[in-house]
Image (cartoon, rainbow, N blue to C red; front, side, top):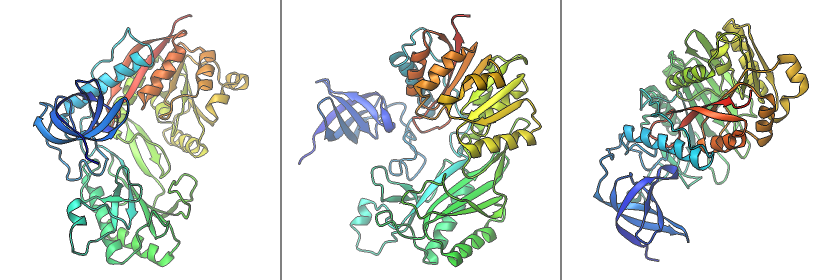
Length: 466
């Protein structure tokens, strides 16, 4: 079947997954892979539906003034960055527009517009956590597939978008500090040279499964390797080689996971060398981060984000604060010195234990952390124990708050709610549920992930009826 080509198509906006948006003269919406708003391009259509089409740029007729040369050799292949070819100032503008569009279209909030997105000081090497997959089916370029030479098929990198069993072998990733590249490439080369089995994602077999590398702003490093088989001597030899090559690693851990999926949250993590955590610092606070712990992936921007939350909370020292989805208790402890009492609630028991330990080490005495299902926790007994909150901070996962949580929050009726979200569409949905009781008085987008479409957004809601 011959694919249709659309010539000299003007790309006018952004769409999901880093694609550009265009509309033909006939009114057909086209999502364009490899495009930048402002490009005029010839586009090959590879998928056609009744109301839209999907295509890719095959020729740039007139490049957008916002188009730049991507830095990474893997850009456009690995899927980790979607916008490296888009000028950073333009990225921030499009993220701001996404926030406003969602708040207006889904939230029905038309009387306030967001200020400029708070940009990241570092647009590369900003991530403190990267996860890689081993595979014995390396993704091959078109030239490699046509080659007659014997090719190395083992890979350590990122899954090729749309190909669950293929992994793009990464030589250099610019998202984390370069030392992560050195560690990752050492492990890959050692495994190849010592003929260790890379995971077969089709047949669910092999030794090496995944590797996580974390680092902190104070220079500490963590490595977690997930094995499919418990081949003790091979595992020991690899881990000892890592220690010898990188004695600066603070925390070296491994997991034996024979499940069909590679999620680590129900697995035992064994600390082989060093401590079972690394430490992160924010102002005068120290947080211990374990392999399973959630911590904002951009440490520098997390500090910017929390300062915005503190500003919107408008604490004077006498307020009672609830921190929903508290995780490690980072926001709760960041606000504690400006509040009378802070209660952190989280459904993951391990996270609450870590929050308690962090608060103890930070000598914070006006916080309380407990495990609870958000949609059930705000009962009469809870309120009797902790009192009526003046301010609520909520930072839910991408799915947003369950409708029952929103209803419970409305029953609490605090003066102010500060809503932090990594998904503006679900945030806007939740805001629409609360619009009869709360007015949005402040909005601030924050860019936690340069070169991607993701944007964090902080909203202040103030009670309408006293």
